[in-house]
Image (tube, rainbow, N blue to C red; front, side, top):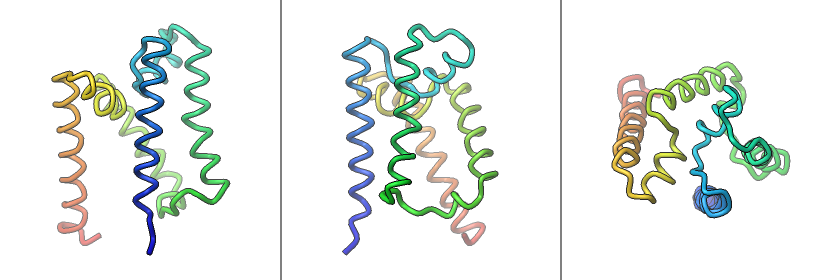
Length: 139
């Protein structure tokens, strides 16, 4: 019996642990879009922490893929789909003043109303998109 769900659990624990370590160690909230945005626009405070975060953000999935532990997805064969998806996520995080890790993991754990509203909005939009794709488009 496949236990693919375990990887979601492991990933969630890793994200939660990373958020707690960053908050307790530096006092900064872990929002990937804010950390990456601060590096790009030069507003980031501590470049060594930012680079360490980015190395982990990119390095761990690369390690999981190279080790054969990552789930096989159809999207990996379509690089343009990943680029367009990444751009849409990046634009959305600017509109929402944060990303899923900032609002969903850190915002909700701090009982932030904005975190709850943003999380409900993107989970709802995701559910609507999947429903539309499956029912409306037959995917």
